[in-house]
Length: 328
Image 1 (spheres, helix red, strand yellow):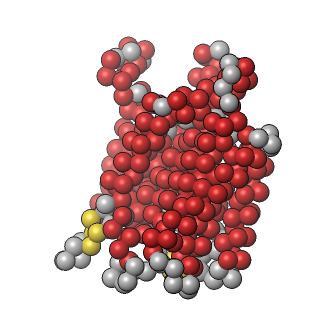
Image 2: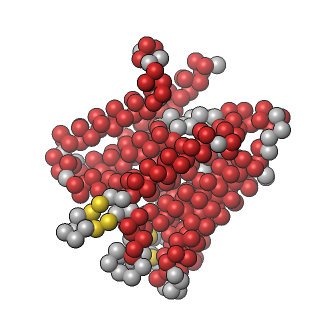
Image 3: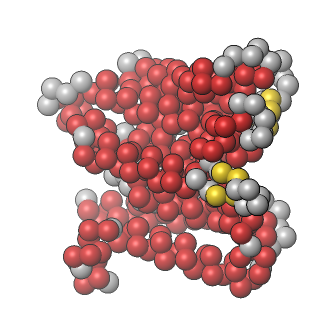
């Protein structure tokens, strides 16, 4: 095993990412054997639709977890942003571009709030994000008067934003453009996390916050930035979500928190902070999305996905703890 890990190619790509990719392929093969309908184009499109918005949520929360924090508000924040933007577009007649920007800014505002409370007021990220989760649910419900909101269809006026996620050809075939958008965003996030000063400080804060502070770095600023990035990506996820699913209902989004965090942990991001993998998060998102669609294709309820996802997270966290103990 050590010989494989020390291989030049394995070191460059990452052993954990290679294992995850193999798991992804095995899952696809198993579901294809157990349920022949899983191979249909519509099933693949359905899995990708789920992966788009979940991917943006997972990419954002990767930055927060890298600092050693957590954000349980990302799902409700995504729904709140989609509700506010959709309500202004469909009920108040605000221009589409303005509504998209407002939706993203709603996510950014929640990220700023979480980051400021955690970094400058030293509040626990767990409690802060739980409070923000309730705020997001309440604001979305109050703003829309507890009514669901439906964004325009592709054939309707202002429906052009859906090309961000999928393009319909003349014969009715869907082209999943959202895959390219998610890949591009993943590359950007990887560059920020691994190649910029901000990313290095975010990872260092997760490794040893006090040591970074004593070295003269403005820890509060960089820690807050992680939450702002997370909130902004939650706002973008709102646009991606309505591009795939149209209707948004108030008071939802909780389950997406767990799935996004599970994708990060599964992908090799340490819950203790200091270690994060954008590539691993991307593959983790694909595994969660494939698992969700595969279970449905086999005729089971989605509850089975929660059981399997929970077990996977437990194994990933246990592996992370064991790895840290060996290093120490």
